[in-house]
Image 1: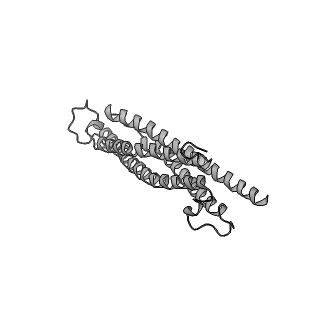
Image 2: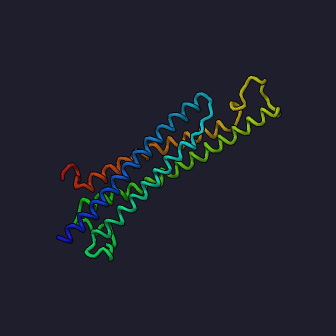
Image 3: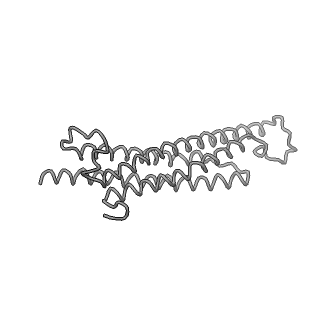
Length: 203
């Protein structure tokens, strides 16, 4: 009875971590979609958008998702072992005894690789949008100071500035990261289903 209680405890904690990972990954996808739509509209209308600040929330959720994936793996390797103080060497050791947990961990492994690629895309986008914001401020300072310019005074310096190129590059980086963010959310959804015993639609 005591072993059953121990298994019930670690498995419930494991499931909670998988659910949290899926929740954070869905949040990442939703936030990236919202920022991309806003930045894309601003690029088309030649407006500045401080999108790099809006991406901070996505970066935070991505970090929390990866942390939850790692915690789930740690719980499974210890909880699934005959003795928790001697964790299993590999996720594959769970394949026979607990296929649901094993399948969930396989999905989380795939998700972790996707999360790395999404993170790289988000950071590239943040770098470009941060540069666009800085260049925009420099353009405004030059314009206010009466610096040399080729315009006739009626053309906004923003339209002549390299910050448009940086903003466009940021939008492209987001567009590349978005499909992988969607795959990330799907992969963690599958992991959540497996964690609760649903594998291939059968429990």
